[in-house]
Amino acid sequence: MIAKYNDLPLPDNFGPNLEKRTEPFVYLAKPDFTLPIVNDWNPDILSAALGGKAGYFNFKREDFKYIATRGRQGNPPKETSYAFPYAGYYVMRQKWDPQSQYLLFDGGYFGSSHQHEDKLNFILYAYGRTLIGDPGIYQYMPDEFEAYFRGPRGHNSIIVDGKGQCRFLGVDERIPDPDTFWITTNKFDLVSGWYKDGFSTRSSSSGSDEGREKDRKNRENIYHRRTIF
Image (cartoon, rainbow, N blue to C red):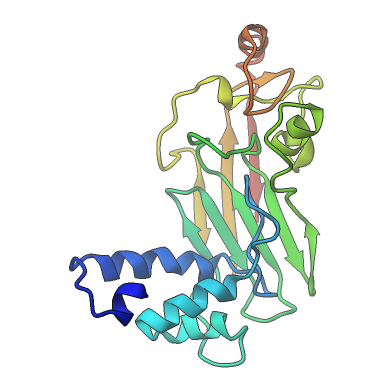
């Protein structure tokens, strides 16, 4: 935007890449035009319209305008449901309407920072409000609340013998996840994913504990599959 105002030249691929990076503001937007809170997302930064405004300013797309104006102008995307396989996010959407049903499924890889132990977690919005949410970030101090917010107890992920996911101990991950299955049609959506990386006592991405590696190995043969139809 600054370069455009000042007539500064940019690489040929800058525009297409920026346009692609703006699309998540459209496809991830909940029916109330806010963004879902995931991982260390700050709950104070929720508006999808901000990204839509920047996108419409640069690319004049009607779907960007639709998000930027919270549905008052422009046209919604042709797609209702959408997949981001490399990020591991899958959006199920009934239709583009404030009262519609919406679900975001997290089937992605753990990553290198700002992540939570919440694979297969989902966020559900319907009939004008969030029914099942994600807590987002709490703080960066390694206390018990930090463990709760980053771990499966703060999300709708399973606990095995009081123990949760522990990918932060180090696992090999393929991107996109070959175990995740996604299908979308004009009649239904289906997503299915697996967690196969064991369970340990304190499920948090901060700090380390040698004892947890042994703890996890005792539960490496326990897998969790979640399918949403």
